[in-house]
Image (cartoon, rainbow, N blue to C red; front, side, top):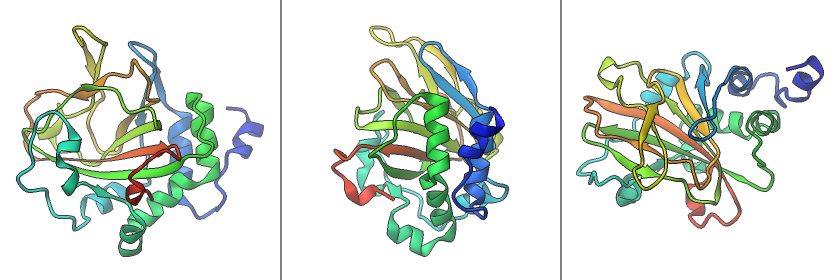
Length: 224
């Protein structure tokens, strides 16, 4: 990235450490084009943020149903809402980073998506052993999806997001590496088939899922 472009994508605030970290991350993405465009990422968040997020006192979901669909357990899902931002500084700081105009411009430049007239949604996930997601594509009102994994637990080495080809066979292509401050980005579309397979893992698969969504998003209480 040239210096002129880089200056145009600096954070609005010099003290927004999340924004600075995200900009560095976005400059060093590993772009993979098959079977659809996706980007593997490293060091999305500043040092110490993954630990702060994993230490949040959100209770682990109880009696979740693992049937391949997150929405089955909607009642136990957690978001970085204004209320949670007021309670937990780390939630507010992560939200501020992703709301930064320079970060949004850098995302657009790196991925080609259009984030104008979108709103931010960040989900905090604590997926227990037995969790899986069937191959699916994100709904059209999501304009951007980013997952950041939060721990380095060796028992979760196979817990990264799986990438698939489309129907009829949904052939497994590979997985994003799971590890602290690693993750994956894709722009939701008709061919962005992904999931979490029946890869055995122990422990809690902690991550955050970042979406920018259009004004058609109905569950506005989830938004940051």
